[in-house]
Figure 1 (cartoon, helix red, strand yellow):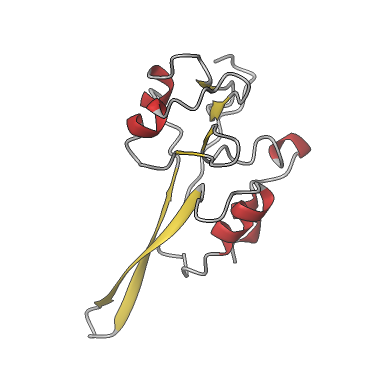
Figure 2: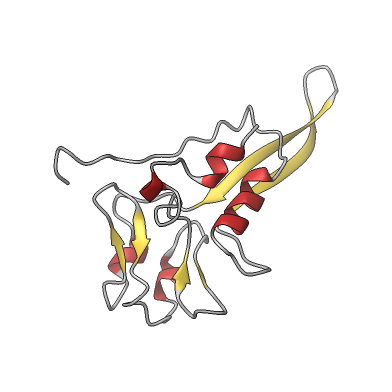
Length: 144
């Protein structure tokens, strides 16, 4: 990685998350995700009782972690899965053969084969839709 490149990371403050799912919906809409699939999920756990006995819930974002040593990249037989200059794990659609190796290799279980295109898909920080326009990922902009 050269010194002029950006290194994107996404932080999800689970103590501030209200579980509204706006991020999940925005991602599905902006990235045209097929019904029954998603690039990110907010999982809900609870209710748990706090010290005062009041119920509360915990919310956990589940999406690509853009691993530095991404197993999905190392198993890809065509080089379709790669890490770009910004540290984002990407998929070159024209090289993907839909073999499913990356889906099986992902330790976070956040990849899938798009049933319409037969190409591997996952969170890419909206790199091809919003980052190219200088905007933040859809999930970030809609979070209340």
